[in-house]
Image (cartoon, rainbow, N blue to C red; front, side):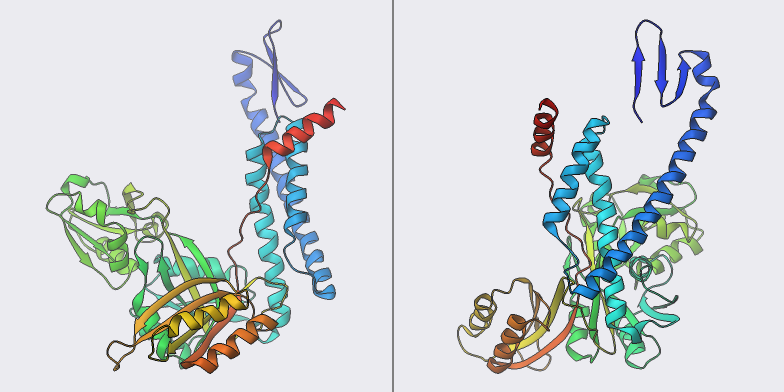
Amino acid sequence: MPYTETSHSGRFFFGKLEYPTGRAMTTDLETIRKEISATDTQLLSLLAKRLQLTQQVAENKIANHVDVRDPKREEELLVSLVQQGSKLDLDPHYVTRIFHVIIENSVLSQQALLAERANPELNQPLNRVAFLGNKGSYSYLATQRYFSRKPGELHEMGFKTFSEVIAKVENNEADYAVLPIENTTSGSINEVYDQLQHTSLSIIGELTQPIEHALLVKGAGNIDEIKTIYGHPQALAQCRLFTESLENVTTVPCTSTSTAMQTVSESNASDIAAIGSVQGGENYGLTALKQGLANQSENHTRFIVVARKPVKVPIQIPAKTTVVMSTIQKPGALVDALIVLKNNKINMTKLESRPITGNPWEEMFYLDIDGNTDDGPMQKALEELQGMTRKFKVLGCYPIEEVTHTKVPVYKALTENSSNLQN
């Protein structure tokens, strides 16, 4: 709530409270804080009410087969909120950021409800999830985030290698596995792609996790005194520019980020550090000497979630399909396959190649494409691809859970608002 100041009285007016400048303002600080806390409580109640209404919207969309997202409706809503906010002296970018988060939560909640209804067999009281590392690893943090929206209790299972992680699901010792597949700084995680060539598991979900690397030490420390830095190979690669800027420092690869942090935590040496997240380091009693170590400021890792059986994705939910294929050994074979996607107006978001074990100079291609396998054009494209490739397999069709924020023409909205006020 904005305050106003009158030059003749030297008093501030905040809501219904009137505070004189000087000592009285300090005296009433506790009163102001109490009112802020009460306002925050009201906001939480309103957010909870909005979420309940969102669930009703989802029920209606299920009954009437309506898409979860309505970009036109979202834009109109945001424009209206910006206009209302401007009348209350609220910055339009502040209003937009807040409601982007609220709308994102609404979309994900609706998608989760639709997915639950389409796959009732997955609504189990316990979710056993395998991942790389232990508590505090980035895979652990991704697991926590993804399954926070899923029904049932979470049982975490950390392992040292990707092959162990996948084997636990294949052998029914775990229900799901969370695997990192690519990073915006260090690129694709080839070991995971190679594992996908030989597994019968299906991709059932994905999420993108911000990766915020920090230099973690036990107790107080000084960067100039660090001689050894432990980290997962991917983390070390993503922070290469930082580690190379240090003099006489050795980097030591570990099987996981959590192993690196545990090594530092259990050591009495004062000249060692680990690369990991601040949140993860807290689990091992480590503190951050420096944050933001990645070569690129925007550092994100995409994770996939795999299970023994595929999931059904309601047509109202934006979906992605991942396929793996090897083409006939002739010039232009890959181009011919990609033209099939173009002709069916299907967007490809990723193309990755990996060598075929035992077949020198032959490649297996992994494709991420936007679309649902239950959709007509997608079915037609997949049939065509299967008929023109040596090997073809759908690794999974799954919901896109990365919500793209609707752009708001803020200045247009404010201009329209000004015109309306003048009229």
